[in-house]
Image (cartoon, rainbow, N blue to C red; front, side, top):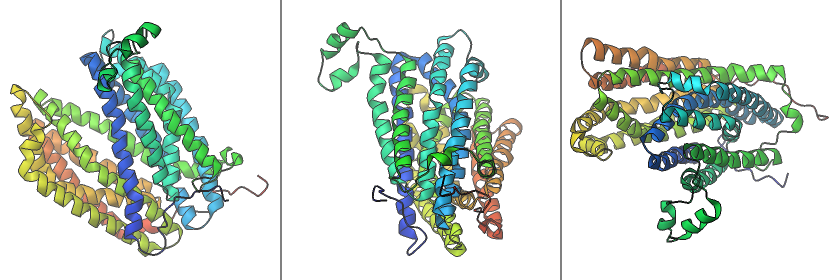
Length: 490
């Protein structure tokens, strides 16, 4: 056991606030690094022209749906590992880790095969016109990403299992290495050695000519971005698998744990399938909402793109804290400390309300300046006006969004993933999209109707979820003897 370097945070004893923050902070940083993949790819692909950038947009619509579904399934590993650890049933924690890895890997292989074969059809489905450069680029990019789906999912699995154990730092370190690799590889795999600006940046002008003369490498274009992403993900995934099976992060599944047991798979599906369904519905819902906004004009779509970036920056702390809350709730319910689990949700809600209140208070008087930072040009005034209106209309509702996410984190940590699924889907499909449609179509409010719909959806969802949460039916843990434990001879 001396080979272990267990970085897990103790959340079941002593003070609660500090370990909750220590557990959540690396998740927030990891989410911010995740944005690094997209920023690097977009920047360097942008040097190939608008068709190349459009290809990434078409492809991302497909990849995001796949990632959402796969990521949802891995949450079952977080919930079960955290609750068995809280119950001090470490043997079953290790077993569930192995079972989650095997099952989600099979799902990834199926996704890869189906996605690769259907990529041309899927890219047409999201609006790319066959025969155009954007269509050709998008199909190539998407197919390469599908070939590397297993690597992507392996890292998701490692991240989810480590989070359930209480270790959020190790996944952060691996994510950092992966993003750094992607940032370094992108310019060379996309542009090659000829006329690559990186050489000038590092003061090596002339070296590109020598390398190009020796290799003749012009880069792979858009495909190079996909190759860089798959390779960098693969390095992090392989490192994660090594750490997992070596026992160096605390969890220590054996090879026998990889052999799927029907009882465990049913438990994984029972918890993970609702989250995967929720993520799929939300991904599709965002597509529908974008189509609605398009009815309000090009400027409205541009403004929505800007406020989405702003929203993502606001959402990262909430997402990280919610995932940290999942682990704290799971471990404490496993340890039969219901009051402590409830207190974790209360603490995280107070923290996120305080953070969002400060951010909104600062952003409110600077609404126009903040929006204008993201766009230039003589025809940008209307876009800036729309974006500033979003901050003024929807900004205060982010306080409710923060509470909403903390409550969902508590529900997922308890294993009440069906309730979390319904409550999450209702925010988009019951409140936001219908109210937005009414505002645009019947009241001719344009994009302002969407901004009001977003604010209303956050407020109503927080209130609805709080009412469900206060019922207290979520506090029963989901660990049971149904999940078999390997015998000493396994």
